Image 1 (cartoon, one colour):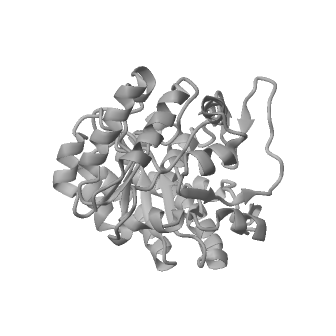
Image 2 (tube, one colour):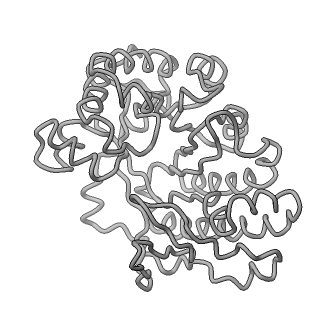
Length: 349
């Protein structure tokens, strides 16, 4: 079977020669992986040697150049200044002193028209025979808290909920409209809608589940429903302990749950597969915090087999690390061993 068929098989209940594999990493880590396996370049290591089944094409920003500063910080499309490694951390909160819906409505939110949603013929050829992930990452939770500042925003959810909802809705609307533009143009070739919002901490959700259901679930549902209306399978990412809202995610149409951070509280893979295995595609779960970071390649291989045996029990599994972004501190040899073992181990379905 080709990569596209394999990438979609867990969603369709189809038999496979092996479980599909997904990859996400920092560019420095990818360079380390290229060296570790003796590959020519990124394309060679990911799609010839490792044989990843998914490829991703996101809308491309074509608006006015974003300002950068002498201290290394840069403006984002949201007017938030960020600084630090890769995407960095927010070091400004332009709505920190806002408290009214009128102020929100006057704010200069990003414009979907500042993005190119076209997938060129060259890109289409590149993605051919692979499961194509398209549209946006849609991190509307992160944008809402960064605009205001996390502490103030969480307080506003209690004491000024109409203001908090107005901010969330504006963030959501941007992604909803930009996704729609890309789906309308390329619904025939986009296979998967994969988005990410980190709602979980190591111990529990960052907010009470009922509050998440009030403020974020309705908008996440709209994003998922729109993608499904264009024929996509759907996956959502959230680090941390999110077990309390997995039933909600399945209810609103999410097909796959990523990244399955198994060392977070209440995220034991045996418990998850027992409770949700018949309904969810599990996506990830091979521990990056300890196994991939600190252990031998043999331990990595045995853990890869263990997770495949557990999370792949119903044939609904995608092989990946327990985080969506492999960092340079992770030994490349361990990640190469993870994927190699996943290819060799196969499945019994």
